[in-house]
Length: 207
Image (cartoon, rainbow, N blue to C red; front, side, top):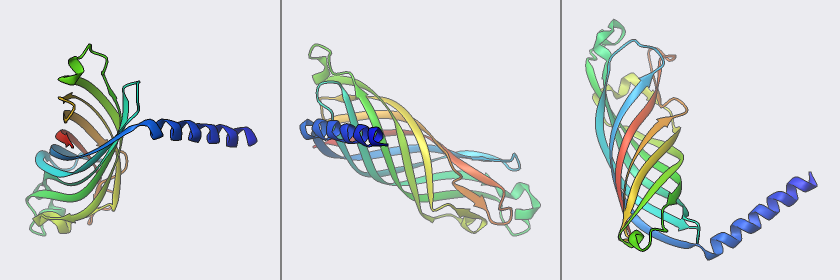
């Protein structure tokens, strides 16, 4: 037990030493989403939908090795067209092909690696890759089909992405995300649940 405590203390000291020398910067970010819902049973049709979001981003650059950690706080909207009208359990209540629109606070966190040793080229363009978790907090559903489903308060996901940084100011990237836990369940069939999956293209500008 003492060894574990000493190891954790050493890790904390090393992390504190790194972050004390690290560069921190802040910016704004805007994104477009192309999302779908993956239900646990193949009962009805689902079509992908477009959405978007915007918010703030912060980045901690670990000096000398090309790694960085960033986090964003974004308002996001995810839309998906669900064919409730294909089943009588919903069509009898007047539901048809409903576009669900999930309004959220989205908090993605990334471990990022940037290629910075490019003989000066990195001052113009620097490739990057990243991976990390995301936490999506449900705010409201802005669609006619809202009363057919019940959203989870928080959905947790994983995402991976690639991109580049331009002129040490602008980051352009694309990522794919998938939820670990269910995003929503239908009210009439509470064991009929779905997870959100989406592609995202985003642009961040750092001050």
